[in-house]
Image: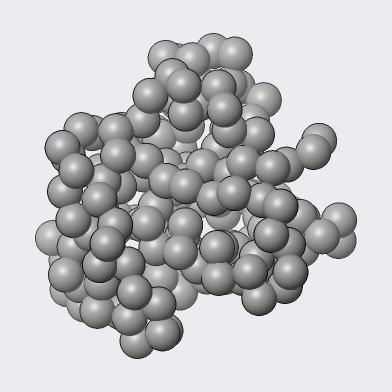
Length: 157
């Protein structure tokens, strides 16, 4: 499968998916893989809401500024355009596939890429939690994106 467009999806597109989008964009840029575009969206329409302050502060500590991020509501066009759709929870996958059955072969939990067994697990939503919850989510997302990078390079996950 030729992957040129990756879409991350979470509940509201204000915590996990913008963090994943930002991390993957940086990793792709740093590795010279500039032919892959990355975006994110949410299942809830947050009407262009900003990323959560806690998400902004921890991602900023990694040297990345996502203060410009505004939430986007997932559309059929986004689903059709994406070559790979990575979600944070099984429920996200189920909702997308239910609404867009033709997407079934390209919607996966991000965590599928973080272990050799391919066991997919939910990445807990840090929204409403403490800074610790955001750090845990960021660490998990970063770990799984390392596996995704290996996959994109054609290496074992």
